[in-house]
Length: 337
Image 1 (cartoon, rainbow, N blue to C red):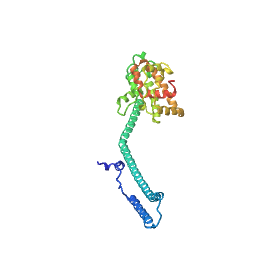
Image 2 (cartoon, one colour):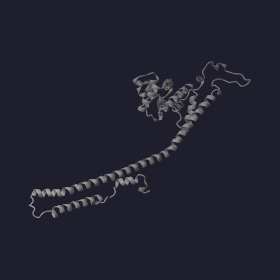
Image 3 (cartoon, rainbow, N blue to C red):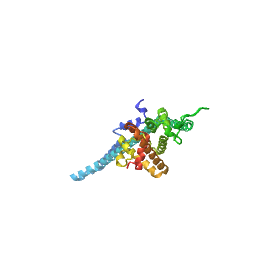
Image 4 (cartoon, rainbow, N blue to C red):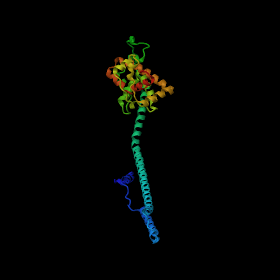
């Protein structure tokens, strides 16, 4: 492709290399003609119209006559130069406008091309999010419909016509969650981070397993509520880059320490997210209730999680989306003050 085929090539080249102008143009020709006519008029007046017996003129008269002859010519050429400069400025202005129009057209064409390229990727991302949402809803529905049909562990069942043994193992009034095996720390951490994409089978498996644990499910549902509300203001946990606190600070907070000793947990530095969240906390009572409910659930979960978790587990927990939401909402609510 040659340079002239580009949208902005013509005005740019015109701006870089201005067209050549003739040294002697119409304006100069007119000025030369006026000067010649003036000199002819002077000759006619002083030479042809003079009297032979006129007294000799002094030096002052001669100097005055020279000025009277030359000054109009100078004025004529000054006017010609001014007209030539005005013409040059007008031509430069037209070339500059043409270059600006070419740059504007090139920018618009580039923006339209970029939009046409980015649109499929945006559409594909939206489709992935929608598919992930449907998959999560399906997982929740599967859990709610299958949990009632699942036999409770630790309770013996009898076949038809058989006898039930080990009656002493039955503990009337024991909650089902007390009979279930505890949720592994790795699965809980993976569930609190939520699935990455619609193809994140490991994330969905951890989420389904965590939703079967009553306490973990309460935290996850509370986190999902606040994450959904925060996304309405364009606040996403993946965009936040908080200052990560050391595991011992998380342990101090889990053990009840408050104030400056655990202020490092409020490591969110994004001013726009903090301002939007603070304004939403003050103006939206639904958001405020959901935020405080989430903070309580996370605090309770952290107190139990800290007892059995290693420093590596606590560090991994602090990097999850749920923990980032806790750091953001906790700082806005003054939890770490």
